[in-house]
Image (cartoon, rainbow, N blue to C red; front, side, top):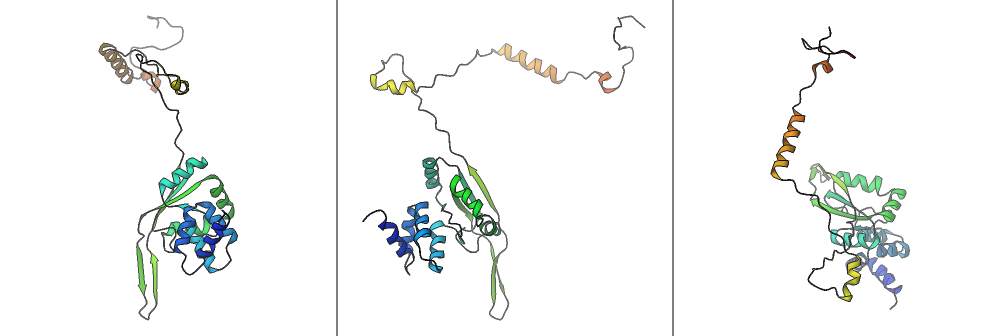
Length: 241
């Protein structure tokens, strides 16, 4: 079975009456699995539901793929050299009644084609539910009921990639360098240079000078007042009147 047949079979199973296993397999494929079902799926209600489940977002009209495992999102970010946009919300992004802010994001932000293109091309998407969203049910007494959320909040975090530092190799002076260690020694980071450590007397002098500068009195003339018995002027000598 070639690589092109696998997505087609998964797509057909994802659109079948029992799609759970196929949906899980498509999610394991990551964004390519979502792209495959968007491109090759037959239009209809089953396809819209499958796109929401594979992308882990309700009303996923632009085909965004969201990770729900932060470790997997970090692996994808390292592999693609992209930062992570992490959404923290009340409730779940793949449910209809998530928090009010996340519902606004789904309908006004994520559904915008230009914004969705930027999110796909430049970021790895991740969401995490902080806690269930509070809900309220209104009973009209005639069999009609309305269930709504009563509060909600959400926040986007931008998680940059950690810098990739070279491995530091330090050699003991009493151990000879093997030929196999030559490549590692080329990437050796030198020890940082440190200045001389000040003694107790030097530290006391430094603290005393800092305190004197902090408590130095302000010249009253700078504040518009002239002290008695003191004359200010240019070119005057002591004793001049």
